[in-house]
Image (cartoon, rainbow, N blue to C red):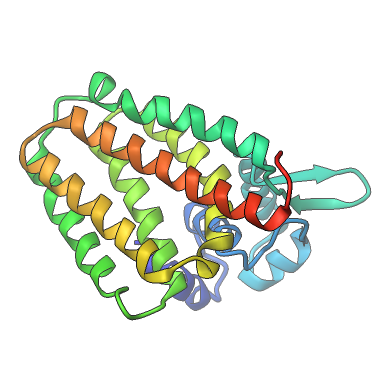
Length: 234
């Protein structure tokens, strides 16, 4: 899904790129740090790049601002936001609570209909072993988040968890290449594999707790890295 967004967007030179595609592409660029924290995004430059008017660009930037990924400053423009460790911990705490509640709020599950998508994600993740592909790593994580939202079958849950995910995951993506690549790729494979086993058993509660546990472990790895490189506690 996200894998082809950049290519498809580049091919749309007639100004017909859809709002959803543009939103997904800019969000992905923020996640991949193509647009790093502190970078100013120009409506006019983006409009020129995608051959559209500034109106859809403005709509996308407003949506990204509502999601906490950018902020508009008077006389400065739209700036990609950063995330401090304290705020990161707070959002991760909410993400863990929400993840654990998946089994309680989810719509009736047709679990086996979701399995092919998770198995496809696992096949992609397995290719990361011995192959450092940062962009694919990011896209698999993003696609996994999307699939979990669809498994829940609850639009409010999907929308809220997606927003919190994108607010914080770029901190992890910002350091993952400095961590043990094989270990991080292994964590991703393990998580997807656990989801597959839970879905095979039609156990949505297990899906939620698996997600919660991996969010928690992810936060621990981020925290250890940040504190190890800052020399002080935040």
